[in-house]
Image (tube, rainbow, N blue to C red; front, side):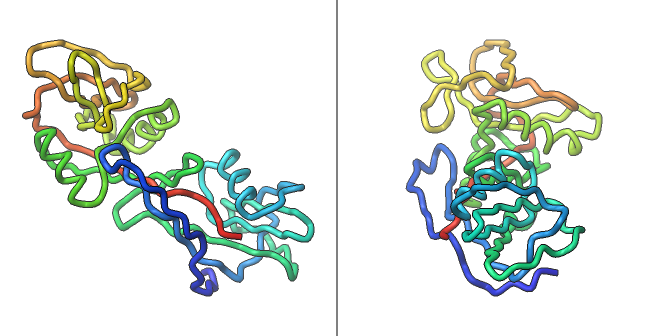
Length: 233
């Protein structure tokens, strides 16, 4: 167990179009834990913020980061089983997880929180339900987000085909996210182009394609919200 002094770090808020993605401040606690011999070490890192950046690039899971400003040493911890590396100048931070029921992923500089809802609804209802939680339908806008989508949904599918509403609507013949930006196609799109099929669903079991469908469905859906990852040193 971490012996945490409940000191809130990072006070950053980004104002963002809420129809695109939900961003919030990233909060955590400063802990008295020392870094461990099982943590990954970086030298010549000037600040806790840069330490976080280095950790985010190299690690999929961040349990704790530790930074020593005097030696400019950064420790990225996903495995806390090692022995303590004691010292008077360590500043260690433990990221708080996503809200209950949400899976936590890291895609620098964001923490991505995902939740799958096994409730068959229409696209518009899925959209409204996510927004009621302060989130949005998942937005697959990069190869990394597609990989995260697969990593999260493959165990849910459990070798069966699932259909999940994802952010996307056809407007004026072009596929767009909720903020009006064009969908880049990182989720392979397969279209039937039938009249009225102007919303996107992802379907698959071990890999996924995005296909068009009308508003009705009904299909399951996944919501996401993103938090900025940074530290106030």
